[in-house]
Length: 174
Length: 174
Image 1 (tube, rainbow over the protein chains, first blue to last red):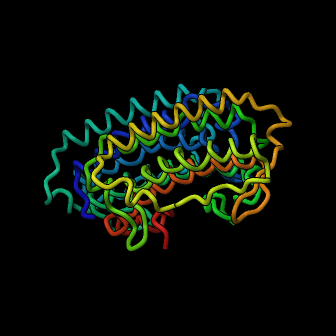
Image 2 (cartoon, rainbow over the protein chains, first blue to last red):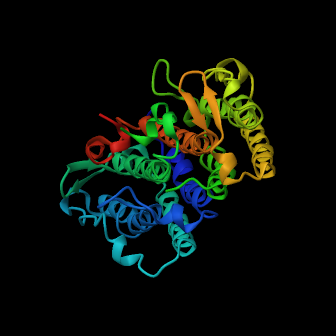
């Protein structure tokens, strides 16, 4: 499916609502558990998404538009949220994510991207040359991947509770 | 994490809202595409969840409570939705799912399940002996698995659009 800005925005706009719908009414036990050492809880994932809004997607789109390949992206810190989220509540994080996402989508809309602009290139510090369209498609897929992660982490808390049904529930893994 | 009815209900209650938040405002192109032959689109998944509300989870809980292991569950038709959803719109299906889930959660609450009742046993036609707690935990995990499936199917529409980012986006698969 070809990337179109309007269709990408449909998803980007919904992600905070989707994550709120999944997590907001849940007990802390669902929010705070992870999948073991060096894995993330749903709470951690929301913090990671916030850091992406602040430092990754739109800032990199600006670099591509303004500087092209001459200025490599600043590397993204995938685990910055472990420090940044400390002392915050899940409702705080959800509200912050919603509000940052809203203004980032507005900025994306104001960019009024043409097909030619979508082909503009930037330089990723590890991946090399990338286009603006690829950056924006990756933003959408990154959102969807973290929604999948949130529900997988939750599902796996019941790995031992489903008994023989684990054979049918592939989200539980091996 | 030990299965507790109240914590399971927290998730069961949110699933229709979560799926609505993800899918409701999307273009048909997001809703109708699948992952290839013999795979499901997000539209198909919602139909499957509806059929589960009608014939699987609560009907099986009733069998366990009323008949125990003496009456095996009716086999569940995983693909009944391909016929049943024909001619329906996504908003129709989302509303149907919400309304069925609401009354099923109400029925679950009215069962007022004690720890002893949760240990009651039933007979799955393929898996053999299962407990009521396992059935209810499987219901929760089944919901979460299908939310993960919906976002995975969507993400994979952009497999070729993300360019080199596919190396970082594990939801895209190999």
